[in-house]
Length: 360
Image 1: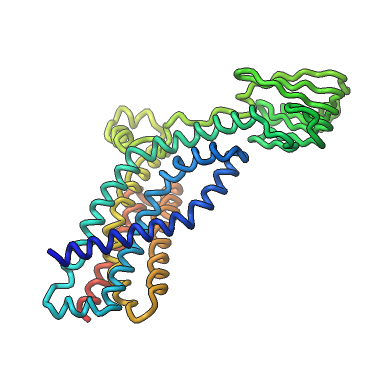
Image 2: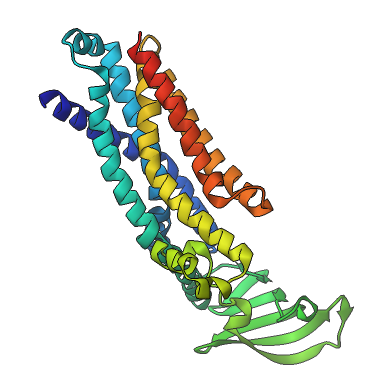
């Protein structure tokens, strides 16, 4: 029992350190992506957006961190001859897999709860937050900023004579359709905002529609609904990633509900549901692969073992997420087989590696 608790502590400690290191590397890139998606909003808005993005990354980063933790702990056991001492004490090697399997079961249950219940709502909140934040940034124009790009709306000016004024303006206004898009050139543009619309006062404006110049107008007022500049995104939550696992299962189990859904959408539901379950089970797979990798590379450097662990995680994510989803889309295989085949093949490889390590 003392040995089991020792291994659990070692794995949890390595997991915390590894997850912190991965987060330190990943989140700066996430912050840059958030700035691009939010159109360069202020720091407070970006910090409010990061937790929404981070929650969606947790189910991917934690399994990788766990795999690297298992590789690190078992590699250290072998490198410091603790593995040899344990075997000489007549402790069966397979008993050493019990502590990481216990941790894997707990992490798998937590990850599935996030994927099945929490993450779908956070994905929805991301979309809503992104639109509301961009609109707020548009209403509160930064002083001195002479170029604006929000969705398809674009403005470029030479200078700012006032808080909401732009001189020597080139303005692109998206229409309801591509044929209604407008390009406006004006000496001066002044913005004023209502609750749901934007009014632009233009001086000496020349409008270009579909490549044809129109008559110059000395004084023009344009009233534009904000919904045209920032259309409400499709967040009706009928896509699988926006639905909880309970909702997906209810649709798939009910003939009446299934009959009202397109076959392609039903395939998406089945894929998402199986993928969430398979990703939650990946912890058990990573125990079978990580332990023998760490022991086998004990004579090398710790870096080699960690590199091998990263390679395993990368192959798993590519095969399970990208390749499996593509196969389902083209209709070559069932969602269950496309998702779970990676887990089954990986588990078989892991069992073979464990057997070979034990037989040494």
